[in-house]
Amino acid sequence: MPISGLDSGGPEPLLAARGIVAGYGKLSVLEGVDLEVRAGEAVALLGPNGAGKSTLLAALSGLIAKSAGTVHFAGADITRATPQQAVRAGLVHVLEGHHVFGPLSVHDNLLLAGFNAPPGERAARIEEAYEAFPEMAERRQLRASALSGGQQQMLVVAQGIVRRPRLLMLDEPSAGLSPVLVDRVLAVAAAMRARRLHPARRAADREGARPGRSRLCACARPYRAGERERRRARARRDRAGLSRRRRA
Image (cartoon, rainbow, N blue to C red; front, side):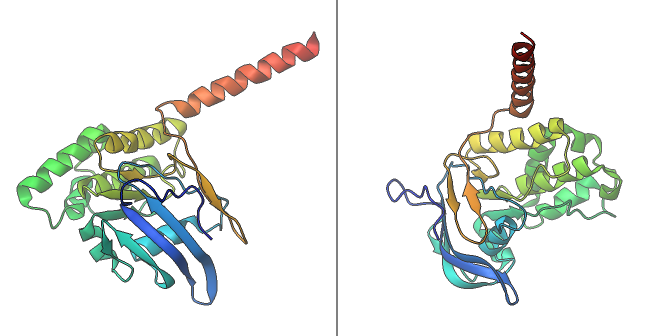
């Protein structure tokens, strides 16, 4: 089933997936998913646990095999591409969880992320990552295993920045983070989008759903820094107003 909201007009999509069928062994998770992401667009995948969000990202990036369907990225067919080939094409997938090289320093983790970039360019990319996350610059010589969970999440996003992707897919970028750190991570994604590095993340420009045994939604609202706290403040004011009206 298609994720609704696909637009057949306009420029060629940066990423176009058609009829994706994928799963794990005999367990089928995705059954005919269509998805498009255009350059400069932010697209979200929303749904409950087990809906297939992570599976779809893994299928797009080549981490798991697809039993049917096609994936085109920047005009090239990457349906059978390995994760390494997808990365070289500019499609970077930041996995759910804090996947860092614990025994290595923060700086060495970023060096590894840019391992195939020219040395001078790699240094510039790492400095961009440090500018996005000053906490990482302060801890550049610290072992990654010594970072907090939130700091490790910053580090994995920083690794994605070092790759300078054409499309950055973040899987659960806010998992386990405090509201302040969630705002920081998503603000960096919004800044990358403004610089036309095109992150696809869990906040979006359009919406839709894949009905069926599980549900995937591409949900449409650009992220604004501090939005989470503003929503909570509005909810508190609404509750306070309702309480006063009940007492009156």
